[in-house]
Length: 483
Image 1: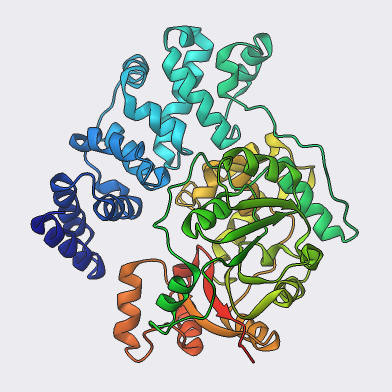
Image 2: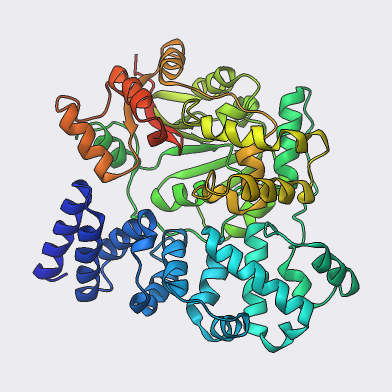
């Protein structure tokens, strides 16, 4: 990287910390123009575009296409920015939109790489798909139809349809356009049985709707577990091994497990889940990752692995258990002394918006959950409160909307509950994690004597004063003391 590009990257980070996204993005684009192959330049630009997609400009469409297909960049970070750039300030006829979409590689990759998570783009292409189906013109746009088919696989068929579309699909169920409405279901042969009714219901949900849907992961910068823990611990050296034993508990469709295995290439990763269809999805997506093994296992029976672990990651799982602290205790029991955990759990305060959404759909939930019900949930929310969940990524897939507002069981946390659980399990807080560089800078200005983010009282106060800061869950690291 040239000195000019490095200077611009530093300026972009400074503007990001200062809460100046336009200036940050302008500097990041300049750095990218000077060093388009630099990993830091690409990823900083992608993070800024993820957080501020409306700042994407049509003249950057070619660069956005390159970023979207770059294996070093997460496509979900680029997708909404790409849609803003493609649809910016243009009102075109459906015929013109279809022609543009058929010819534009940006649209193909946007549809194939990530669920469409911007409401205006979903509406535009739902209407376009309807027109192509009912007019029979879909045959004139084969590349677009193929991209829409890939999108249906990612979204699970979340886009809405009407009675005229249903009738047309019934008349031609095997036509290529039909595959743009619903993907084939995932299936697997093995299955676990459960005595607890909550566990049985939650497992059933994830068997039918594997979660989360994803297309590919961006390889993180390789590191080792001791290096990572030292960075979290203010630079204090860690005695953890490089060839560590890692567990991903409740791995779902394998995205986190893949990232963990690529992040720690010298470690051995075991990933467990109780949904056989989720694991079928995971094994397909993660084929070729040599240090990753998937096992069908209930988290409560983790001791059956006969192994203890240097690191355990459990993200978005504990709050769906019948007794979250009991599940956490099962994991803590197989954590080695000196080992660390990364935990993510729902914040009850931050989930209040979800409670509002559930109130709007309460009358729909008296019938069994199926794809039609989930689309009806989306339709109701779009009709009555279109802005309520429009910024939630999970709103745009069937598995996601099920997980977001129609979940079988949810038991949220607050910071005092997290603290009590760590105390009872003999764990110590290593660090709580804030979402962005700007958030971290604000915290450090308010708490300059807490550079490792370990003040539980400050964390609890932050949840009360800025609850939606944790809308993406409380994320924190904790450690089992050596003695």
